Image (cartoon, rainbow, N blue to C red; front, side, top):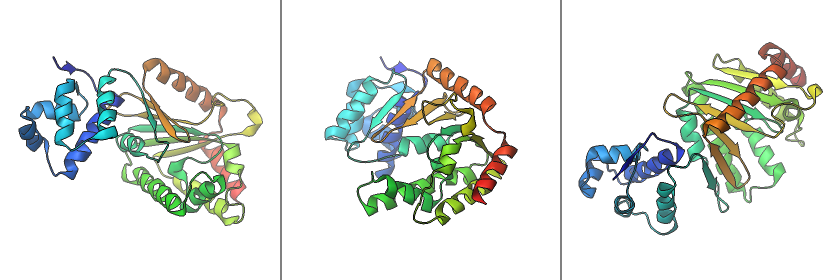
Length: 280
């Protein structure tokens, strides 16, 4: 019997992968239903993450769409583990942000903390490029161009989705880190861009001053994404992997961190003055 369930991140991820391949083939739900000899309702529920399909049915779904090899095995495992909360995405041979961008596009509220660099959604292209070059972890100029382009494209969510509320907590260290050390205009323009973006009605930027010493988010950067379409998700980014948390007890911990961080950080007006002083 098929297992009907509410969509968690694994179900959403599986559904999104299926939908992308269907779009490549120009097949809608009805066409896919005809090819699989399954109801349109069943196809829709699988692609929306509402059902865990039986292995035989999913295998036919995947092979009909042309999935094979490692990608086929990956999606079969994803479906087997669909009951498990959270998702670890590893990409040792590449880089991807599709899952993160998908959740950002559908968010109602995004709250992020950054301790050493500025949030990707607030970076200028020159800042993003400089941080990648200076870190030295992106192997080629083309790879840098690809990542900078993707980062700039993600930022459209701020202007094109004015209904989304953004709150960024940024540690003073990130504001003082001299990114673009060979060109001081990089940080000058970055700080000016930060002030321009924070002036938007749906964006709040708050500085965590170094003088307070230890702080609630001292363990590192994270992003809490909330939506009316899915349960809250916490995103943690690493060099060759990304971790999405969604278990209620995990979300509760990060909510507590943000509540205490809100007490410790400068308010919006104080933060604006702080950033303006640094950029002056």
